[in-house]
Structure formats: structure tokens, C-alpha cells
Image 1 (cartoon, rainbow, N blue to C red):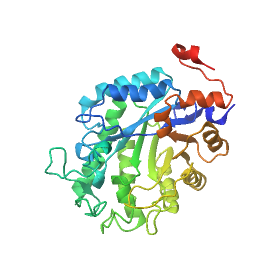
Image 2: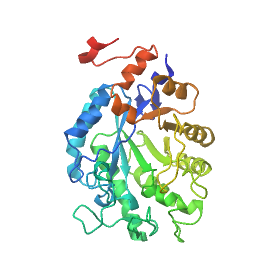
Image 3: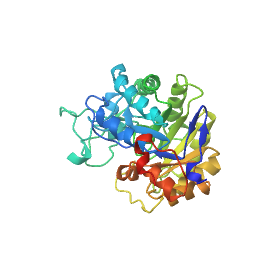
Length: 355
């Protein structure tokens, strides 16, 4: 058996293989609503054989969106279309997952194909942003408002009720987005968190916001369903968040019932040069897995069946998350199984194309 196609049981769910569709922003929503684009985008990858499909960063509040065109789950009306999508994913033998997110100071931006720049709050498509500290992401951007205690508690509550809606919509996995310079990541990093209260300063204080969100979500998320957290395992800059910090956080998250750490990197500091190469973040997944004693996911420039299989075979990570490669080839799992000499079930409608 190809290791990439070995099943993995996490709590009550079983992944039929180790291939996970990574969250990928689509910037194709109006007022946070999913639509047929999202159905086809995720549905085609479910047909293609992925075991778990995680939605794009789904905002827990309107002001938590990266852009005005982001997917959202801040009101009950969002549930109906999302339920249609999760039902289709499960009909293909895959697991639907949702990434819950708040963009913090990186909110209120245009879509990337329209420049991706920050939209000022006086624009119809813009709004005031918030963060742990009034520190802008770059000199070209407007400084966010520093969150007060009431604002922090509201956002924690927003994550909690979003988890309730995700469950009602049929999702079986939640991933909390604590990476790429979004709000949870902003609290974790000493470069963006300059607070002097219990949410800033020491490591224990800077991780408090993330841990309180996990606690809140755990109050409503079933004990038998998995909870993931995505982190930026390194900021790639001196004085920033480190792999050692990530390992320490992973241990705390495991104690609180988190099942898997999705190990990405960067995104919180403008202008940082990241040494891109195939699998450049796999070492983070391996370090967190070994020293944090927790399941991990590897992501970033994983593009071939052999490469993905080797990551699982050597125990560097427990799953691989694919993004751009899945956009290039929504049927990557079907092709990978063929290349690795492993026979898997195809959708009966497509069997006449099977190798």
C-alpha cells in the first residue's frame, strides 16, 4: 500500500487517505454567502479523491473578512448553501471541514486580481480594522484599532457561535486559522502584539487569546469531532515567532483537545524573504509532530505523488495539505494513486477513464 493512501482515524472520523485540500480564498462571495462557485470548487476536488476538504478562511464576523468578497458564517442564513456543499462532499466519500478566521489588521482589502490593497473605512467596501495593538501591517496601511477587553471577548464569542453554525451546516472538522498574519497570529507574535495587559508581553500572555478561543469552541463542538489549528510555525525573521514557540503552543493546544496542527509559516511581517523550495515547510510539521507529540499537517510546494508519499512514509507529517496543485489538477489523488501503483475507487461516472 502507498503510505499516502493509508487511512487515518481522528476521533470519530476516518480519512480515506492522507490528502487534504488546503483552505484557499476564492473571493467570490456576496455578504459572506457561499454560492455555486464554492459548490463546484470544493465538489470537484471531492470527486477527485481528496479525503478532507477545508473551506477557505471563513469569517466569523463581517469585520473579520480579509475582503468584502470573503466567505462568512456570522449569521444563520449562511448555513443553507453550506449544507448543500457539505452534503455533496460527503456523498463522494470525503470529509467536509471549515476554517474559521478573523483577519484582524489584514482585513478590509480588495481582491488580489484588483490589486489586493487595503480599502479605507470611508469606502463602501471598506471598514475599520482591529488588532491586538495599533500597529499596521505595513507603512502603506492604516493602523488598526487596538482591541479592548470587550472587543476581545466579542471575537471569542463570535468564534464560538460560528462553530455552532459550522456544525449545523454539516462540517465534521473545524480548523482555527492562527497563521499568515491574521488575528490569532497577530496576538501570538511579539512583533505585532505590543500589549502590556494579560494578552501581551510574555509567551503565556500572547497565547492566551488563542487558548481562550479553543476553550470557547470546545464548549459547543462535539467531543468526537476533530479540531485543527493552523499556525505560522516560523516568521522567518529574528525576534519573531519561532519553531520552539510553535512546539510549546502545540503542547498547550493538545492539552485542550486539539487534534492536529497545520504547519504553515510567515505572513505576519511585511517584506520577509522566505526561502521557497519544494516542501520548504515540511521541517516545521516534523518538528512540531516529534517534539509536540501531536498530529501535524505539512503544506507548501508539495506538488508530486512521490513527494507527498515520502512525507507520510517517513513520518514527517500525518497528512499533506495541497492548494495550488489541487487547482492545477482537481483529480490529483486519482492520478497520484495510479503513479504510486495503488488502486482506489473512482466515482462510477468516471470509471471508464480509469487507468
